[in-house]
Length: 62
Image 1 (tube, rainbow, N blue to C red):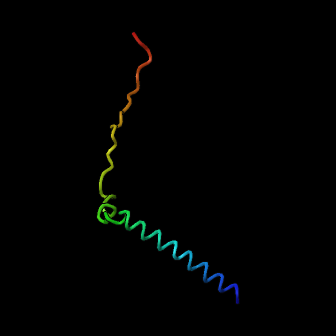
Image 2 (spheres, one colour):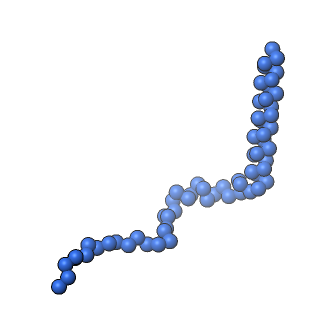
Image 3 (tube, rainbow, N blue to C red):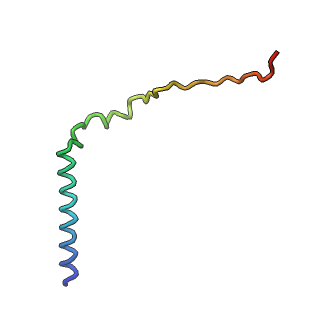
């Protein structure tokens, strides 16, 4: 019977830790932008440097 009490107390501490982490995330602004993540997949990813196509060079010179 004492094992179940230890498990209940431990689960309350774990749940309290998750609650504190959630409240910290809300206060620090982690959940403010709810629109961008849902449409981010629709945007094209643009590289800062365009890809350069390489052309085969002729190694023999005249």
